[in-house]
Length: 416
Image 1 (cartoon, rainbow, N blue to C red):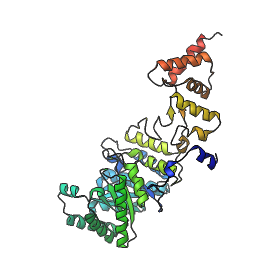
Image 2 (spheres, one colour; image 1 turned 30 degrees about the vertical axis):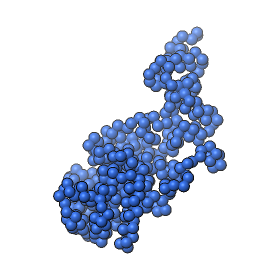
Image 3 (spheres, rainbow, N blue to C red; image 1 turned 60 degrees about the vertical axis):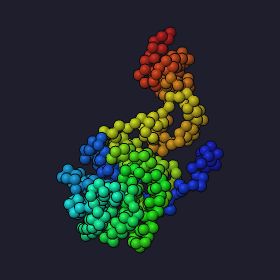
Image 4 (tube, rainbow, N blue to C red; image 1 turned 135 degrees about the vertical axis):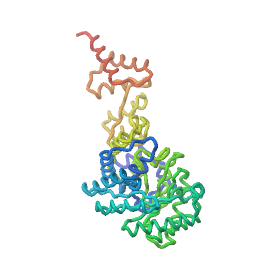
């Protein structure tokens, strides 16, 4: 279909002038599924085999870096991080690696040791609380935070590690305090600073304001320092905040598959990639996205809701007569592009899926006829009527077995 025809069929209000414009800087993605994602109290820690499979899927989706764990947590974490780092080397994956670490030597040492052992550059993500509420709860003084941060960043740099300095709860911290801790970390050698919406407090305006402020601070230091955004979705704004942070100028955005993570989770990596493709900000092959989400759901025991966007069971499935009729008419025109968009804001083909038409109590006869034809079954008025009448009496979408039983009964009743 030509661009002219597309513009005639779909008017895109999203392209009207507004705040959501393509970032001028290239933006990378950091996948936190195998670290922050596993902090959810409801997830199961996947086997190392599952983690390796997920790591490969991240790589195939073009994700730039992955947080492969917090080796300071103990021997099991060290073993998994080492194995994942080794896989990146052995399989010659394009994805980079980083590890979380508290601002403590005991957390930084295993990151450096694994990096040296495997022969892989691993970014060390040293984190500490930055908000007054966190410092009050912990009994920390700002001077102690500054001293601890400086020692940790300096130590990590001297171990040959690239350092990202992470301030937890940045979106509730005072600018005066943030300026001190960031300047201290940058002067100690941090190559990145990470702005964290740890408790999902921010709105898109808040994310934009913080990023713009941080960019001005970095410019004032004169250092070549990158900015990261790490968001949670306690208010349901994780994805919107990530987009806002990108527009405001961050260099990398953190997210997790299916949004798993602490409490209600993090920005959803899958939805972030889909939206950026639809906005035209990136061009990525997303055909493996459903497998990435499915594998994460299976290996962590996180249920995938049927109505989850894009990869949920119902994302491209309808039993409604009006919706189905429009899709069927588009397919009869021989136009899959049209069929994929007439009742979908996200085309199923973008992620390697197809539209599915089912039969239920809100269906029309065209649903029945389509179902039979798509499976190569004979379609005749008596059979269509029987299935249609059963659907109208039913309180659910008919299963294949239920429909097959009607077909069998109808065939048995036909004269030979």
